[in-house]
Length: 198
Image 1: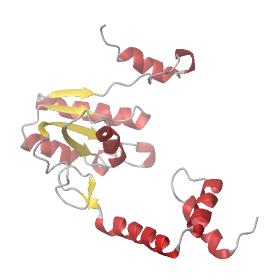
Image 2 (image 1 turned 45 degrees about the horizontal axis):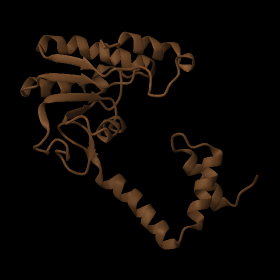
Image 3 (image 1 turned 120 degrees about the vertical axis):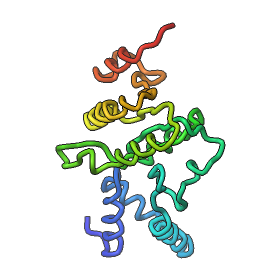
């Protein structure tokens, strides 16, 4: 179907967003068109503000408009534990649990030789520097169990061993309510590997 040019351009821009296909892009574009002009101005200003005001914390590399970020500057945080994640979205997911109260380190990517991303292209040096300069007792690797995640975790594990600190990895396995017959082999293997005593 042929859309009028401004609508087609708006749909095209929405489609550039991750996980937005043609139908979702069209629904979003039509929704924006139905918004009042004032709402659209506020929405576009929020986009501009986010783009211009958000940068990275100089300590943990979390997205923030302050450096150090809100987490690094929070005195109630356990400063002896660092949870290593690949992206800010992973940090947000962990924060939503309200179970972790330490510090973070955002790698801003994973080692992926296929994509030309090596250890020097992510924030590994900065992590080692933080551990060396602070009284860190534990590093938690909260990295996805993908091929790239496994490679990054193994690499970090080898680098962190000489520091003589506790190195842990979050458990992977079956989600609540999952039936074994529907779980894939990798998930089942991780669940068996991470089994705990009852």
